[in-house]
Length: 176
Image 1 (cartoon, rainbow, N blue to C red):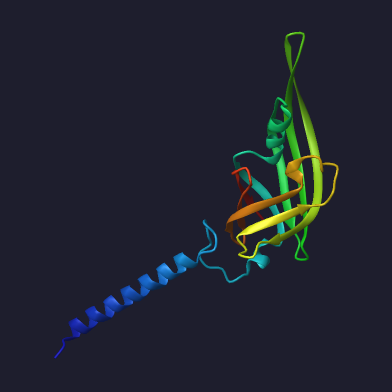
Image 2: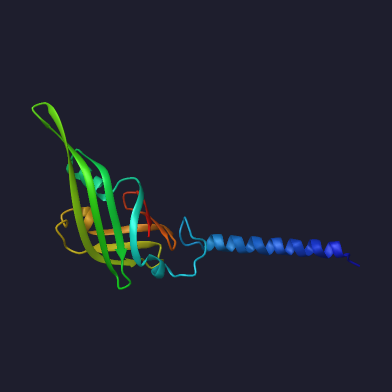
């Protein structure tokens, strides 16, 4: 005959085993590297809003452009928003304050410059909904490869935070 302690111990083992299975199952089903682990909202419901770029680990697109055209400029301030509409429309607004440095007669000069832009386009998820494709409409910036079609890997898509990995490997953290 089993004792009460033996039954409680077996019950505790079963609960622990069940908990482990549930945790491992959620881990293997996690869609995005940085979460969230579980969300009651679909990715479409979470992404549709205006997102403010809060932090960049790597280059901004305009810095990649500087490298392409060999410009000696440094970004001193920026304000970038991505606005995803539920009908597939997309708007990027960017304001960059930068310092250009140039040489004249062996003298170096630096001056500030502010550059504002707005580019419209369309967005959609890939079939797994782990990447966003943005197809920019023809614009004044059409000559720059950075402002045509862009794919972003989604590292995190929560209600209030989104982390995207750009094609250049930079991680962009957005907040709503």
